[in-house]
Amino acid sequence: AQTVTQSQPEMSVQEAETVTLSCTYDTSESDYYLFWYKQPPSRQMILVIRQEAYKQQNATENRFSVNFQKAAKSFSLKISDSQLGDAAMYFCACRRGGSNYKLTFGKGTLLTVNP
Amino acid sequence: GAGVSQSPSNKVTEKGKDVELRCDPISGHTALYWYRQSLGQGLEFLIYFQGNSAPDKSGLPSDRFSAERTGGSVSTLTIQRTQQEDSAVYLCACFSGRGDEQFFGPGTRLTVL
Image 1 (tube, helix red, strand yellow):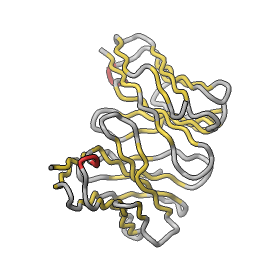
Image 2: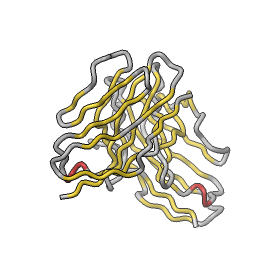
Image 3: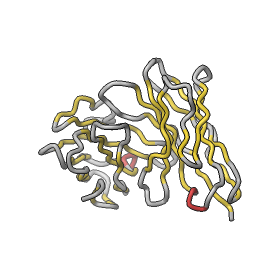
Image 4: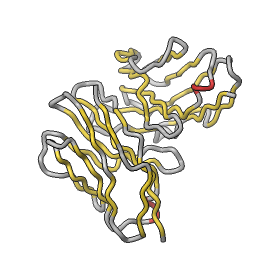
């Protein structure tokens, strides 16, 4: 079984500043994948970034990057140059390798961006 | 359509009634997932379909919950004798088998009075 923990129920950031959202996970699998999803008020889940556990290099997608610490089982998301449109609920998720791609999610962090 | 659609968008029902929630995945996406998002919680896996078969039903919380998929496309999640604790947003996601991204629908918000 896998568990994902997000210890920050809410975070806020000033527009144009940088914010880091925390996530820790636990899994007994050696082959697994980690994700950050964004959920705006529309409820539509949007994939922000993904990381294969076997890759040491941290994933980056434009203003979004992760700090993947495998030994510590930590997977934080850094948002640089925050924009008003980044305001949303952010979920960290994990799935194991194999053909079943079901995701295990954390409880989420609500990000507010202040103008 | 271009994306995943779910209907109804919102459903209010009385305790004890049955409800059906529908998911229309992206055409050609063979894998389909149902998740439940209760207030203040993350998404909780319910069931996984590969084609019309459900190899993983481990997340269904009770025998009041069932789901089916027909033609490798539309899926219906049925909740019988609804209880107040069933109130949640029910999200559907599909996956093409290529890459790693699941595409989510907008969800159905179910309220059981």
